[in-house]
Length: 366
Length: 255
Image (cartoon, rainbow over all chains, first blue to last red; front, side, top):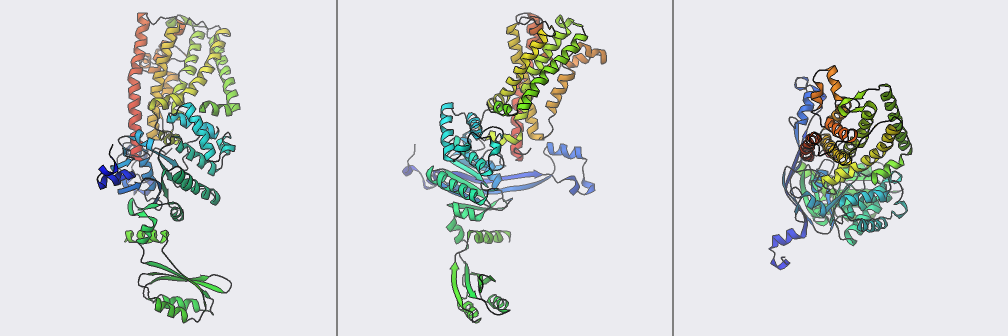
């Protein structure tokens, strides 16, 4: 066994990463419905079905286009992107449910393609919306069934299930039929199932989707505090909810159309758009037409990207200006002062993760 | 346990299944009584022949239905993420349907024997071996059907074919030699079906007191065993390539 001193710098780094992905590609064959094809190209339905069964014809859609990603051990790592970015495909490849076209995917050193059963001992996935639970038996019985599939000895599984039921605060519902569970309770039972095998890495795909705000907040706390901090699990969280990612993740990767736009800590991602600044000014409200005049003059100030005014209070308005580095603050304040309106408050803030994501997305689209 | 617990929640289904089984055997028995003919192939009467057909239909064939209905794409993703072995999957998913059908087979056979006077002459060893061979064949067919269902999602031609073959050609309710009365040579086609061999060896073991050590019986058992030996690895192969294809297509969770 090598010690940290024996390892080369690159080797040490790879051992500290619990997930290592290199050159990962995945494309799917898609088949347009007959109606969308021109009549001349339309095949008889039976032919089209046969072509699909034989895996011929159709068009290719690239879901992942050369992903390189390292997820460090411990903490919550966010996988962010809009719908269709490739998050679920990546999660399912890691979960051994989809085979990649090419590339290397290692979970704690185990290749998910060459040794899927070994990889599943290191990683478990919470796929919301595809629970696979039996609704007409109790939560406890469902967990017992999956414990049997994991091959956990009976005494051990009983002890572990009891502990997990307590951990997930499902004590009062453990012996209730699953069909009486709320969405939040089912989601917590899913976490219990993922924890049964005691895998060090947990994947969550849109974990708070379809949850009410209170349940979602509780669930986020469960992932961040209970799983990542107390149980020292590495959590990979796929979400399109940027606020959620900002609240929970230590590091993130931004995905767009199967490619990684940026990866790093949330601070690092924000620093990629560090030249952006948001200035918010609360002003007393002027006479008719003042807002349009002010906006016109502000948009001519060097460095101003956008400006908008909206009602804030009974007699106040909020001016929000987004600018880039080098914003001419003197001109800016001259224009604001020219309105002769009283400034009630002023605040300049760093770019949000959402803004960073939008900017990076725009740059990639160009 | 999970399947049993679920089944027990459908109380009316449990009762109607129980009653349905009794009514079915009664109607078959009445039918057989009125057609008081002998079945020389097994040196028995038609009632006895039919009762063993019912026994196989309830004791062996449902094993396959259990596998293919429970191992569906909807639950497959969750189950596969636990990293189970194929054998665990198959035995785990088929055990309860099998136990349930076996449970229903017992009273049906008792009614056949004590109410309709079926004469069973059972060789226990032959019956045990025939049951094992039959179960292995049906399991293999069910795994192939499940593999196909993983790819095609809806169409399940194997299960459909198994049911059709069992009901028409395999001799569940009549001696297959009678098929030649309708289409000459059709009984030869019937012998190509593995289900025909299941019915045949179980009837040998339960109607003729045939010993496995008797050369002609052993030959029939050997033929059925060959089906099991060929179909089992074939089923593993079909299931594996189907699973791989669904994983390639990313369609494992579709249903």
